[in-house]
Image 1 (tube, one colour):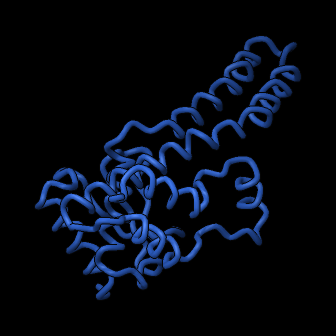
Image 2: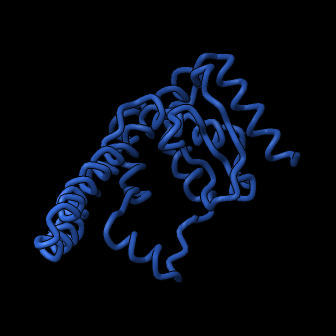
Image 3: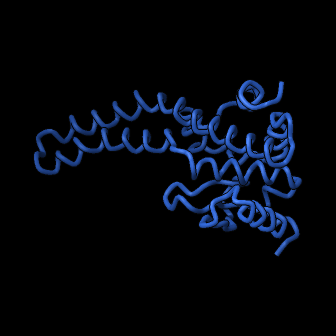
Amino acid sequence: MELSEKKIIDIFNELKERKLIDPNHKIKASKKPGAFRASVFTSNTVFYNPNFSKELNEDMIRFCLLHEEGHLKRPQCGVPALFFLLALGIIPLLYSIYDPSIRIISVFFMLFIIFSSIRILTEPFHWDEYGSDEFASRILQYNYGIKKPSELVKKTIDAIPSSLDLTKFLPRLFFAFIENHPSTEERIRNVIEVVDEK
């Protein structure tokens, strides 16, 4: 186990001992791109990629872990909205199995629903990110004496390598339809307005 990986696990355990992270939550290493991410399906696991986390200090790691904990603990808007949208497009297609005469119309309806409405998911995904930033920032402020968490948020985001390879077609296509993260400037401005000591 690398030193950076041990540091992440030690900090995760420290946060659990202090009851800042749910004692039932787990952490697992992952090879997927991205420094940290919460599991969408299990609701109790945070994944980390040690290769994306090497430049982070202890406070940055705390922010990342608490941010993902925020995704696990707070009600999320983006993923349920995405599933609802997909279901809305797929239900008529499934119905066309029983009535083949509407198959072509169902396919076009599904494509229309997905491509015309998917852009509206940007806002719910942004709400999720802002909420998790606020969750992590308040804990760091109250428990670790970080008076202006916005400065730590900026340093952390700047230190994490981008996991989105825009040179490939599929990531570019996904990014064109859903911007699931607000810009760094928007995230910092939100933490300044909502959490930072004035």
